[in-house]
Image (tube, rainbow, N blue to C red; front, top):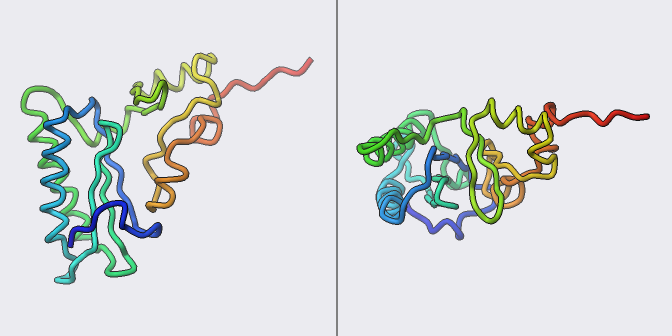
Length: 170
């Protein structure tokens, strides 16, 4: 059963799917509409899932399930991935589009998302072009609360921290 995202509890489990290019308004509206249709009938072992979908920053499709109501199962999660693949095919007809390109790192700068290939991001962090304070997206957040509080994190607090240059003491 579909629930508006802002009504989902803080403990709701989330999945974050990042696009490799911005979604335009038509794509965002379609993703929301199709996602709401999916959520309204999403179930695990015949039990309704209280679920929601949201598009953020033109780049992220967020799916959520209130697992205190009913828990998502492997099969139900697979069906949600099927929805994401369907959207990917729909939006990729004219161009190479992906929700599953894990080699693109998203950064937040000047109130917008900037994508960099992973290798380039590592290099730019290593040579100081990307500050340890720069914000990046941690798409592995597990809950709505984490999405709201720990999704955008400084590079120094992420897996990229190991590429931050160590200051040489004199």
